Image 1 (cartoon, rainbow, N blue to C red):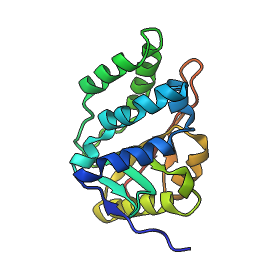
Image 2 (image 1 turned 30 degrees about the vertical axis):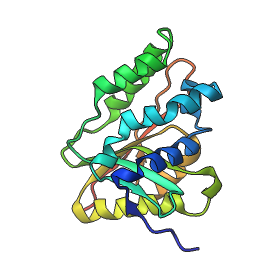
Image 3 (image 1 turned 180 degrees about the vertical axis):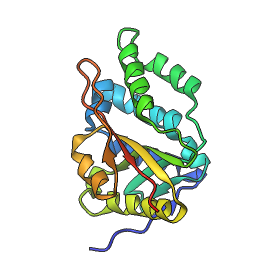
Length: 196
């Protein structure tokens, strides 16, 4: 089976990228813990993803397959997530009782995140459920890991779904630990060290 080709998303692609990722995360343990009601999930997930990682589209570091079967929002080294915008979005999305749990997870994730000058961050990668098990996720990962190996970069991600860990391991990522806040699902921070 041939892997699909991979392209950079353009600014005009933003709605399709966010739609693909919304579908991909519709059964994600962490996202559904955060947004368990279907209507709240549908109403908020694209906005959450856009505020958290949409700048990867602006920075031309978001990868997509030709028909948007999958997307990977990479954040280049030295580019920070707009914590103020994320905080404002979270404050209007989550209840005052639940928000501290969300913030605690984000703080734990950041504590694992290597902020090296050559570290790429992958906050979001997903495949439309109608196109899973066709090599789409592998194609997206391979495209970036080959770039990292050419350029001597490292990468970091957090797996919010235990089912995806094997994909990341196959592409050279290593488990750093586990994050679980109270009744949250387990989040697994992973790093791919620079290859010489």
